[in-house]
Length: 436
Ligand SMILES: [Zn+2]
Image (cartoon, rainbow, N blue to C red):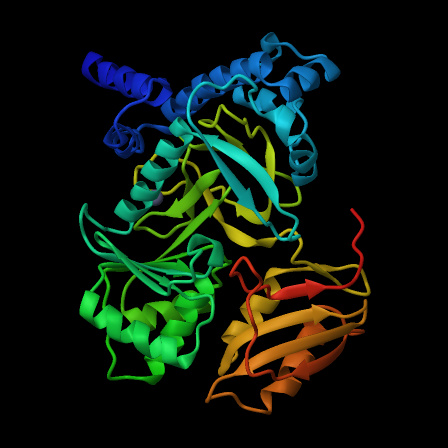
């Protein structure tokens, strides 16, 4: 490294590890520059951020004080990122039970109360601080920049979560953002959305996967309605490859997968090469467990540290590096919620399979697989106009030969499948008690 680039690196490192409160643009600037550092440099910055976080958690939160003592740890027990493993996992159960002790009791700065329902529907409370919020916002802006959106350009948000629009307002315009609540997405609203989008001409359409997918199917049927953004950003639900193809066809634009959670904000996002999701490494350190479970340590939230938090999703790690030049590591993509698993009578664990199979079947608008008992599966399909009745037998055969021949499969064809209160459509429901 020559002295000029060494100086630039040290300056960036200082920006990304300093906790004095700055103007919001400061964080965006630091992330946009920092993404081009090498993976070693990024790791070094992560390690500095992690050391500071551990120091704070140990000295200032009752929960971590207790955990360090229980596990016989001191701050000297940590000499690299991999030593994180010495600490236990932080599960939702612990979060529910210990959330008061997880917080810093004498916090002087601002703090924001947030809540998430999670896949179990049991809400957990948590606090975020101002530095966290600034990094979260800057990371969102980083994802928009990866989609090719420039500062000030119009975007639209098709959002399925009722909580984010508490008064039930369907359409809200705010600066260069058009927000549309898509919790109940019927034909009348689809027509209204199309008109709004033609008028608004957004450069980026971001939204829940299923909201975007429903709109895309509508657009492919209504050929004269053309909506041409520069990019589409899909989030909040698993994006299956065949859904991505439908979105690309309907909007004639590249599709970017964005992954995050309410507790730790942006975790990963695709770059223009679409070869996996880059981890937002200045926000989070990501560990992938042997079963694919994702564990996240947030590097910015001090008021209530999330160290080794079990997000509850299953992802594929990637051994390949992206060639775009960004130093953030890459994961292949989200496979599903850890709870979205069906265990066959022979003990096979199945998750991504149904989404891949059913979204490849012509005329399947939406689906839901319900495991009523170990052997009984009900597959609920909302039919589109090009659904072929004969495909039912083919689907049954495929599932039996690929998953388990002892499955008894029953089909239902409801008019609609409603999302859960989070706005997310649960595509796997299992009534079978799962051990381990
Ligand atoms: Zn890349």
